[in-house]
Image (cartoon, rainbow, N blue to C red):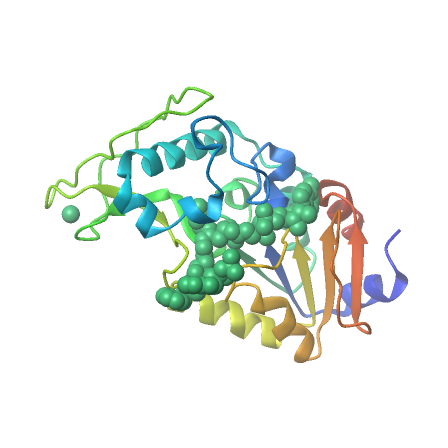
Length: 247
Ligand code: BV8
Ligand code: ZN
C-alpha cells in the first residue's frame, strides 16, 4: 500500500532521483554485499576482498572473484525493479539514476545515463598504467565454487588488469559523485532502493536530498527511515514495491 502523500509527491515531482544498491539486483540472483561469500571466497568478507591490498596480495584470488561475479551478471536478467525504474523515467519530467552497483542490469532494463558511483565489472583496466584493453572481454566460464585466475596482461605495458570498480580506500570518480550530489540537492523526490546505507560517501546521497527538502522513500525488506516527516518506508522486495509506484 503506497501512502497517498507519496503518490501525490511523485505525481507533482519535476525531478526524481533513484539511488540504488545491491538489493535492487538481489531478485536477479546477484548476491548482495551483506550476503556471505561462497566457494573459494567463503572465508573472506566482501569488504576485505574489494580492496587494492587484497589484489596486491593475491591478484589471482581477486581477479577470479570478479570474473565469477561478471559471469553472474552476464547470466542474470533485469528484474521487475530494474524495469519499473526504467518505466518511471518515462512518467516524470526528469529522472536521475544513481547506482552503487557494478552490474549493468539498469542499462539492460532500458535506463540511460546511469551514474555509477563504484564503477563497473565490465570496464577492467591495467593496474599499472590504467589503460583499458581494446579487445572485447572474454565470456567467463567459471566453476560455481570459483577458482584463482591470473589477471590478463596489459597490451601497452605488460601490467596486470584489475576490475574497473572503486575499491574500499579508493576515491570515487569525482564527476559521478558531484553529479549524484547535485541531483540529490535539487530533486523533489528521492527513492532509495536496496541499500544498507553503510558505504560512504555514496550513503550521503539520501540525507542530502532530505535536508534539501525532498520527499525520501526507502524501498527495502528492512527499511531504515530515520528523519520522520517527508520520509516514507516501503517494506518489501524492490521487485514487488517499485512496480506499485508507477501504477
Ligand atoms: C573513500 C565496488 C575516500 C567494489 C564498493 C578506512 C579507510 C578508507 C576508507 C574508509 C575507512 N573507513 C571507512 C571508510 C570509507 C569506506 C566505507 O564507507 N567503509 C564502510 C564499510 C564503513 N568507503 C570507501 O573506502 C570509499 N572510498 O572513502 O574514498 C578515501 C580515499 C582514500 C583513503 C581514505 C578515504 C569507497 C567505497 C566503495 C567501495 N566499493 N563496490 C565491488 O563491488 O566489489 S561498495 C559495495 O558495498 C557495493 O558497491 C555497495 O555500494 C556496498 C554495499 O552496499 P549496498 O549496495 O547497500 O549493499 P548491501 O549488501 O550492504 O545491502 C543490500 C541491501 O539490500 C540491504 O539493506 C538489504 O536489506 C536490501 N535488500 C536485499 N534484498 C532486497 C533488498 N532491497 C530491496 N529488494 C530486495 N529484494
Ligand atoms: Zn598497462
